[in-house]
Figure 1 (cartoon, rainbow, N blue to C red):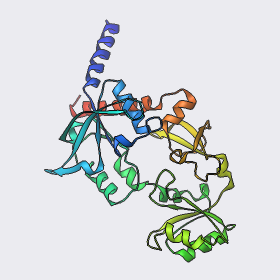
Figure 2 (cartoon, helix red, strand yellow):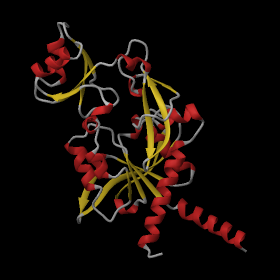
Figure 3 (cartoon, helix red, strand yellow):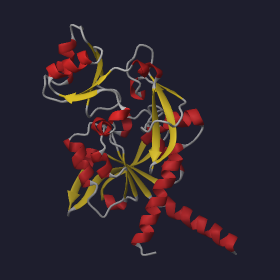
Figure 4 (cartoon, rainbow, N blue to C red):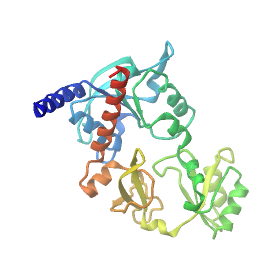
Length: 304
């Protein structure tokens, strides 16, 4: 009897999961790189399990009656470049219609981004991954300043003379990067004696109006940087991002290559690249976690 009960429970649970709605707040789905994008991998995994997949965009969010709403698209996806998405429906709905909402919008972490993290918190609503408070407090470049022993000499400033002095004080070789960028966009290598140094710093800071991060250049960057995917504080997998020949940046979006890496540096990056190297399915483990958490929330709300 116990075996039959477990089987019946598993069937009931599977049927319950098939009715779940999983949302992805993201950049336009039409523009994703289907063989590299982690969000797309998560969508494929949800679809494989028979879950309803919905796309949301930052500009589609709105608030009505003090509750978060959005224009949503129910989508079907496939890993086929140029023909990877089909829209099955489009409508306005409260976020509470969703069971899980993955917050996957790329930087910049600007006013619109921060406002979106506040809107999605207006409840009651779905399970949010990652939590908006974490996205606000640990966004992009400035968070690493909490770990000075793990980073190269670093300066954050918008003052061009101060940035130039920093480069000169650290071997005359540095890297300047925007505070809210992603994918290696806007990253510049700057050197003492370069006749274009002032021009590069003016470009990076928008003529002294925008602060940037300057760091001493590390030659070891040619060997790649190690990144780790964490789920609830536990490492799922790691990848070594190696710059292509003649390139400073190791970001996958800038043409960096993936290589195996050991789990010894804690910074997250691409699910797809780690899957390809290890034969694992990290997106399946992330979706397992999300569904389990969503199920716990639903049972708690029902008083079970």
